[in-house]
Amino acid sequence: MTTRKRKKSVKERGYKSHGYGAKPLHRGSGSKGGKGHAGVFKHKKSWIFKYEPGLIGGKKGFSSKKKRGIVQPIKAINLRDLAKLAKSSEINVSDFGYNKVLAAGNLTKSLTVKAKFFSAGAQEKIEKAGGKAVKE
Image (cartoon, rainbow, N blue to C red):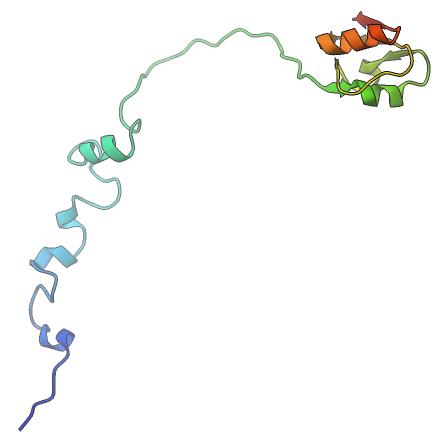
């Protein structure tokens, strides 16, 4: 007479391991050295050095505050846009919120352009068109 096959999970009921080898291997985290980053300063140091370098170590202490002036961000405008903004023969780019003139595009009329900064190409193109590049 044939017997019915019992499932593996049913067969292993009553055994501590239940198919996972020794008893602690499928319980908490006792045989794995703790959960997550537990023990990184003790027994998992080699794992940290390999997979997360820079987590442990480095310099400590105070660093002096660097004395710096306020750095003004550069807000640039191109020559092609400058020609559209110019109502007269003189234009001050700071009136429009810009502080640097760049060389993209061409000038068709002579303009006196006032700005804090000019690129070398922009200065050359302004003078080529018969205008002046005046630094503020």
